[in-house]
Image: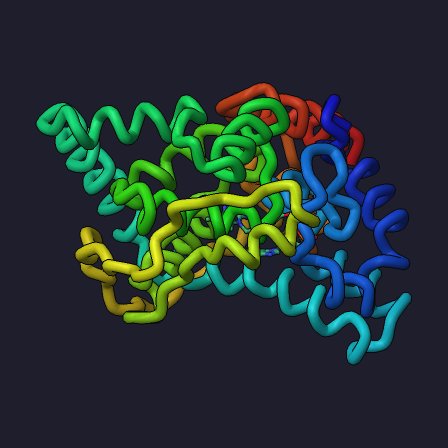
Length: 304
Ligand SMILES: Cc1cc2nc3c(=O)[nH]c(=O)nc-3n(C[C@H](O)[C@H](O)[C@H](O)COP(=O)(O)OP(=O)(O)OC[C@H]3O[C@@H](n4cnc5c(N)ncnc54)[C@H](O)[C@@H]3O)c2cc1C
């Protein structure tokens, strides 16, 4: 578990799931959008750092929850877990979108170099100096914990794009570099959804009154945009391609198991059982959180 209480081992992920089970039903549907503030996100599971690295799988979460609640009670939680699978599948079918996004990000950085006004607004945003109380507090929470509540992420992205008038690509990169659950699919595509680029024309516009109410009056932001100007689609959304065929391992060939922080529960894969694994290697993670999760994955892989 991290200092801020996020699970980064398989055992901690299951323990968190068990303690969250009573909340995963109707309480989740009713309260999940309440942002209680740093260290108090008790209405949501906080499992994302573990799911993102497949320390626990979506299937394991859903099976456990449905053994405890009927589907009618747990529908909201189950559908949120499926958002993750939806974004992953959507990106997998459009593999050029990620490199196109990275190229668009470089163009957005060039725009910062070319415009002093844009640069100053961007610096104020990333330094938590916008004067928009909730936004500045969320930057600080993100810097300290690596986590923001889903509903706060939606407000954050909306304020970044529509109130501060900053390129969405820079905002997505800002979050990606700090999130403990940073995920190319969920992050990039959620930003595009807020910006009105995913469901074309459907934007998410943050509202001051709703922010006040969902944060129990902790924030009372002023000056938020009342209209949304949808940015031009810098990525020109590609058409879906067929999903790549799965390359099955040869059960009689000596096998090298390569662990990455994309999948740290190889022992749960049917394909792995009985393979003559001769060596296990890992790709070092990008940050301390990846390395914590990798140490757990390696330990289990070596025992299996
Ligand atoms: C702008 C923006 C950026 C985001 N970036 C990321 C990211 O980089 N990585 C990431 O994992 N999620 C991202 N999300 C989705 C969501 O905010 C997080 O998955 C969620 O806040 C994680 O907290 P939790 O585990 O307590 O969620 P819970 O509410 O307990 O949900 C359980 C699980 O369902 C999945 N899930 C829930 N809501 C969503 C959602 N809207 N989209 C996709 N999956 C969801 C997650 O795997 C989560 O762990 C982003 C959302 C927005 C609006």
